[in-house]
Length: 371
Image (cartoon, rainbow, N blue to C red; front, top):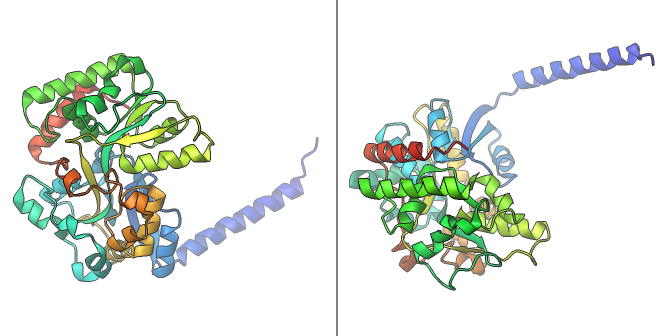
């Protein structure tokens, strides 16, 4: 068959014109870039569009990471807003990697942030705890627990015993059917909590026991590893149980409904005593190029409607008191998602120091997680 060369040349010419138009359009875009570095699947779909409409002087460049440990090596790149967890923030403060915030530029945060977050012990270092909110603003938070299909996993009703809850993830009858985060502190924390130890221990023997437990789990149970991929595997019934952040439970429930498996899967979530509650924070790196835009973005995220949309889309808990009041009471009053004072008293945030990084990294390297 002969080729229509005239048509091809015409099409090629049009492509060149369109490409040139794109270059000209880009060159004429006078907006300042604002580079955001956030977790995967961790912002409502139209939040960036709404921000750019509210602040037409900025053009958002949006990048994502999967966990704190994969984020950290990339911080030499020039990001304007990053959203690490609180223990990573502690490290970044200690290393001088993030800026102090100008709270006069954050009126929404001042007005709408839950006072709870001014009382958290963010670090074993009291000086860092006292100055923590000078550097970071809570974005969303969660608890860490076990998500499981109650049709396939039998847990005593109402149990929060760490050995019973996490025992599911070390039970050989569930070989190839459990999920583990490929995140250092969460994985090691599960093992420490299961053994009855603090998730912030520095005791050599306790860390060795946790390492051995996770190595044996890797050999005998072949857990699926990841973060976001585990949600789909749980929703489709490929896994019977997984470590999970509380927000992931809500996302999994939504996906089960979407694919029509609500009659087949009874997905539940339980947070054991002594587990972790985690707070992801908005920060401005020391090498940020658009500090004014960064403050505008952080403040924008505390608009109640924006905070509500992000909370509902992601499934995690909002530190915005006005947005929380707009949630379904079944969610906002659930201690798995919004821990009350009694529940919080049994949980820990992760601590960070050079000693923590060294010892926990040694355990993680010995386990040999590669995916």
